[in-house]
Length: 293
Image (cartoon, rainbow, N blue to C red; front, top):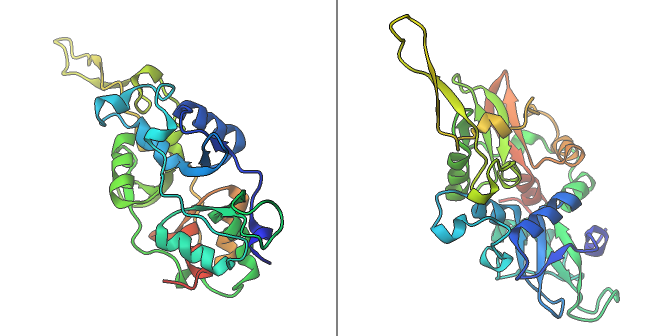
C-alpha cells in the first residue's frame, strides 16, 4: 500500500473570505474535521480545522472575536503555514510529519510520480483517520499498554465549556476525560463537542448557554425560593459522550484502532479495575506508524 492508496479525495475546501459559519456547515454536512483553504486559482493556501473554529466560539476573546460566526471570515482563523506531502513520500514519513508538526491532515500535492494530475496540483488529503484505517496492516500484536498516553487530562463534569476550551487550548489537546467526584471516568468531551455545541443565542458568538436554578434562603414560612443564575453556563456533562467507551491496556492496539474507525472517535480512555490509567488516541497510533517517539 502506498500514499495514493490512502489519500482521500475529493478534498472539501473553502475560500479565505468565506465565513466560519459556512465552513462549519460544510464540516457538519460532510462529516470532516478540516477543510483546505484555496485561493481564487484553487491553489491551497491554508487549513481550517474544528480547533480553529472552536477558538472563534469562545466568549472571553477580544470583542471582534465575539461577533457571530456568520460575520467572521475563514482567513481570521485558518492556519497559513500549510504543510504538504507528495505521492512519492512514504506512509511512515507522512505519519512522522503529523507527529512532529502536531497536525492531523496533510494535503497531497502532485510531484509527477502518480500521473493523476498536473505537477503542483492538489490530489487529495491524508488524515489521521486514513492512517488509523491502515494500522491493522502493520503491527497486529502490539498491546495498548505499549503505546497509550498515561498523562490524561481530566475535567469535572460540572466545569463549564469555556473552562474545557481553555484547558484544551493551553495544553494543546483535543479531548478531555470527564470525571466524577471520585475521579472515576464518566464521559469524554472533545473539540468537536465545543465546535458544534448548539448555540442558544447565536448573536452572542459564544458557547451555548442554559438557565440554571439554585435555592435562595428559606422564607419565613420555611419554603425555599428558586432564582435563575448564570444563563451562559453549559457544563461538560451537557455535551460529553456517554456512556463512555473504554478499553483494557492488555488489549491489542489494532483493536483500539478498529473501535476508533468504527465509532468515529479519536481517543479511548484506558481503564483497568474501574481505574483510569490513561488514554489511547489516534496520535498514539500514528506515532507508532511513524516509528514511535
